[in-house]
Amino acid sequence: MLELRAITAGYDRRAPVVRDATLTVAPGESVGLLGPSGCGKSTLARVAALLHRPDAGTLLLDGAPVHRWRHRAPRELRTAVGVVFQQPRLSADPRLRLTDLIAEPLRATGRRAAVPVRMAELAETVGLTPDLLARRPHEVSDGQLQRACVARALVLRPRWLICDEMTAMLDASTTAALVGVVEDYRASTGAGLLAVGHDRTLLDRWCDRTADWETVTGRSCGGPGAGAPAGKAAS
Amino acid sequence: MTERPPVLSVRGLSVRFLLPGGRRIAAVTDARFDVAPGECLALIGESGCGKSVLASALLGLLPANAQTAGGAFLGDLDLLTADERTLARTVRGRRIGLIPQSPAAHLTPVRTVRSQMEETVAQLTGVRGRTALRTAAERAARRAGFPPDHLDRHPHELSGGLAQRAATALALIGDAPLLLADEPTTGLDRDLVDRTVDELRRHVDADGDRALLMITHDLAAAERVADRVAVMYAGRIVELADAKAFFGAPGPRHPYSRGLLDALPDRAFTPIPGMPPELGDLPDGCAFAARCDRATDACTALPPFTGSIACHHPAPAPAPAPAPEDIRA
Ligand SMILES: Nc1ncnc2c1ncn2[C@@H]1O[C@H](COP(=O)(O)OP(=O)(O)OP(=O)(O)O)[C@@H](O)[C@H]1O
Ligand code: SF4
Ligand SMILES: [Mg+2]
Image 1: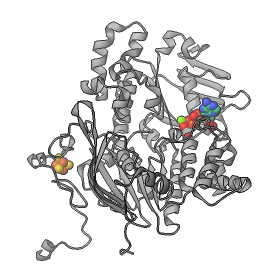
Image 2: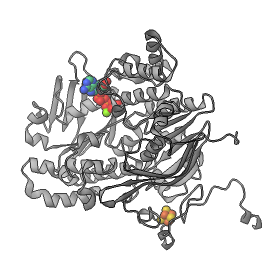
Image 3: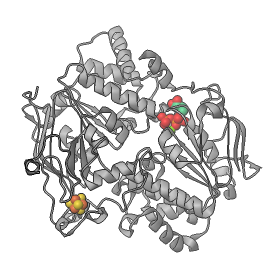
Image 4: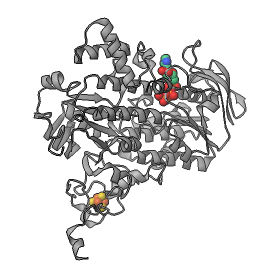
């Protein structure tokens, strides 16, 4: 299980953007988390992905409470979670060729020997040709770079996947292709998925169930940057 | 109304990038379309197909290694040959309002949103004086749904959605006759997408003289706002259609357009197989042939653009008036 229990998190302790969020993903389950822009979904996704320490609350991964985040998180936990973000340009090291970008988690965890086989499998899965794999991020399109980022997230065979607006930058065809890649991976490994986004049509089609921000946090979106309600009142 | 000249007239626009080693990237090839007063044209297509390069060409913002051919007329002014001084002083912001693809990069990181709004108001309108500028900036913010209580933030303190609305607010300030929006709704939730494109639409409808060219991969946003749709593939416009016919019945005619719509999660949710070709290494014939289920030997020759479609085997055209050959039936 991936369990977020009463998580409070943000960038300023006095004004957290996530308050008291509770959400559970069972092994093999896919859960969509829906919420408006600026409500704090990405912040909660980063907590689940071990990238942002919450101010309060508990994250349990496969029954074990997580005590350390970011580079301090224990390796066996970090390798259990794969993450894909919205903006591939911000999450990809611009100096690395796509092939090294994808293989980097293998090297960082001392699995150099596995690189050739795993790379061959993944390149095929996400549809990247040898020509594209040899390029650096500025030499490929957003869609091609996101294909590489998905491959990177899968390279260590994580039990959990966190996709934060994975397809928000992408056209319809690339979206359908990459959702297909994630679902094929899950079908063959039984991995669980938390997919964060604001496209209800997409998440309903993609996931076993979808949860609204209000149900997860017990309140409607009212954090800083919650422009939608203010704007609605104005119009 | 049909007599009125278009706001923007793009005539055979091509853009080539020259790379070291003599490589040439055919980013845009022979694009032809008009945008009429009061009209919204949505330009759609896969990532990397040349949409943003086309926009940069219109704004004179291409990098130094780019070569252009053809023309792009805003009234009498050819945007492709205008000098940088003209473009900077009279076009960008004043005659073309630009809503950029990555708002965070467009906003100046070290200054608050308020100071950028006030500066733009002072540059592009007659408003003078601290209090008046403050009020005008707040009005501009509200117009694009940007919460005025966030005006004192720096761009990095905004969510993606809010940064986009700040950029939209800046673009609307000059009341330019042509609005050019490059992916204006990326990262926004559906409510905000609707409100952003509705605001753009309102701007166009306000006096009937303005026009909107919206570049987007968000087909739902395109359907909501557009009168006509231009579909781009591998640097070429392959279909130009009425938006109602395109998104509704009878649907798109080009196999690529049909594939794009079929990929939507509320339709078949199936991707088009493969990926777009490299723009530096395009085939001689139809660039979609490798992915097309209707391809035949004829497709090894480049399909000419008829004004509405570039395909050797398109789906039948919608038939509002009976075609001549129907008379014998
Ligand atoms: N580094 C930061 N410093 C201060 N505030 C921040 C920072 N990063 C994010 N925020 C604020 O936190 C809130 C939630 O941000 P988050 O990115 O989690 O929202 P989101 O739901 O993913 O929004 P969107 O869909 O628009 O990207 C927003 O009000 C945002 O302005
Ligand atoms: S010209 Fe041929 S290959 Fe190209 S889209 Fe039409 S049918 Fe397909
Ligand atoms: Mg987000």
